[in-house]
Length: 129
Image 1 (cartoon, rainbow, N blue to C red):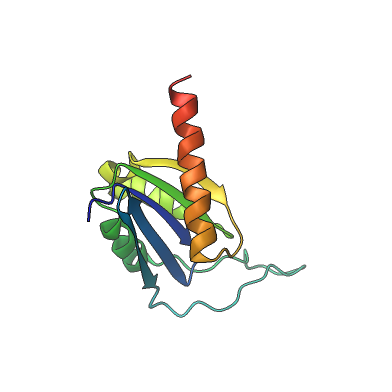
Image 2 (cartoon, rainbow, N blue to C red):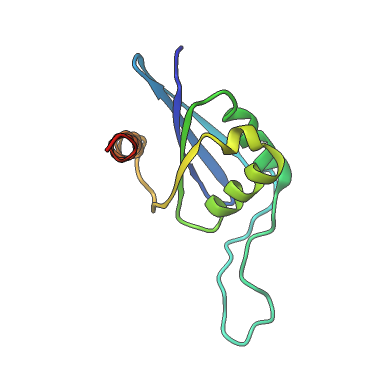
């Protein structure tokens, strides 16, 4: 397949990766193997309310993103910004393909793909304006 673009929806439990190009799209799910409890920040708590960092999970995601020309990173939690930071530090070639980081709740694959295509069209229009 000639997929050049991707959108990834990520939280601390899983990543949904959709690669796409002129001839369609492919979907992949990558699961964290860390035990990630449902974390909520509570008043008067010493803990920061964040899920533990899973480097092996981010490594797997980074390798799946290799070779793409444009990537949109989305998700409902801090995992999207943690992934972007991890890519900049450990996978700079992949990080260069990241064109945006956007909050996004829990879309279907179709909604996620439509969001990414529109996002990339808008970014392309701005680049050529």
